[in-house]
Image (tube, rainbow over all chains, first blue to last red):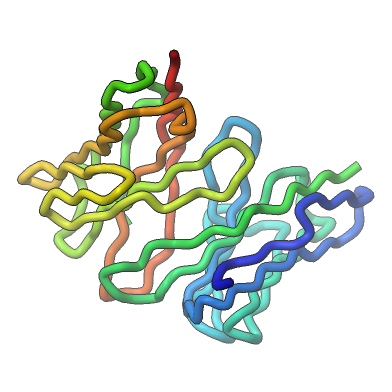
Length: 114
Length: 111
């Protein structure tokens, strides 16, 4: 099946530990995105990448890092510098250009830091 | 990308049409209007998009005003399963751009 996969669905970590969230897509999309969602809130953009080996900070990049070594993969690392990491994290991908650049989302990873 | 403004919440009776407004008064000529919805604890789902003409698909209709400064998403016969948060965003095409969501409209469909 074509789509975008995030894993794991639930993740628990101790405070002070770095943790990496996986996002893989087989839609041949150039652009990929990471969002954070807190309870009752909208989606806030963390990082995005328009092409392999390139990425830009979104609105709330502090305490996060990403890499884009392959077109299919865009992992997000939540570092110990992120002061409030417990949240729902969503990954998306889309065509980079074009008139039909709708984004496809994964089902999310719910991270809980204790 | 242009900013959008949506009401925080709306109610709709099941079987009735749900009309969700969105203001995008600073939209540029090359920006499309996209609508997504998010059912609780899931990833957002694409609904429809348009540039300046009205659009319809199996899920909804999109009405864009002639000056393109606002639009309305219409769910013609809302069901309980349409209860979700609906996001209106604008996005340029022909350029690489980030995809920014606002806070959306929480639609509650009731019996």
